[in-house]
View 1 (cartoon, rainbow, N blue to C red):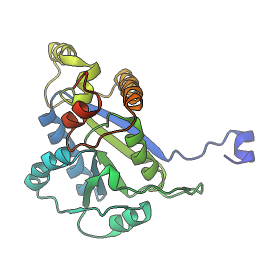
View 2: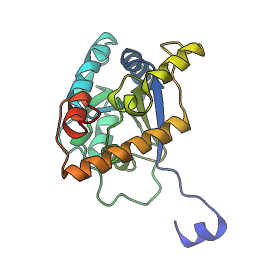
View 3: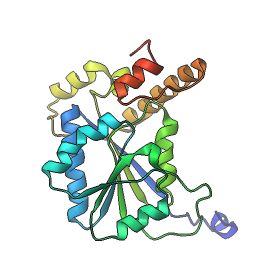
View 4: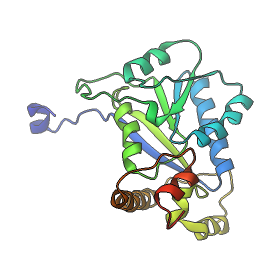
Length: 226
């Protein structure tokens, strides 16, 4: 923030807006994310669709196919500048890949940017916050107020660690339907706390072991709860 902005209270444009959408089931999550991708495309926006694990991305493939959305895999070491070039193309409108394929700008520009032409939709939260942060750092170079929407479900391995079946039961008793979602600051805070706890355990072990699915990652890196 510049001196005059600090003195007179002018706020810098917010680069990244993060939202957590929580679904009851994995199936509902995939359908909900599919609707969001479809809505972005039909309103003229390109979509950067991401997952942390290959198994999660593969599970969403059927949703993309059923909606007849043209899509293209992103290359390794994708930069924000390259992603914006993709967004400017007429076809396809959906670009998908793994978060580990992103290469955020090491020194992102502090200049004011136009609104982002890309909607960033993520099919899961990672067990370690550092992996989610890679997506946010990447998004910060895509434009002002880039919206990053994380879709999770109460059946996801990470959510089961701190939410448990009782949360799903309570929501059902309150009348929440399978195709409805919640956005809760309290749930988001508890999710951050769970990620921090897992990070401490992984640090004790010395390193993170890669995996193709969330359950496989949990068994390899947090075996006492896998």
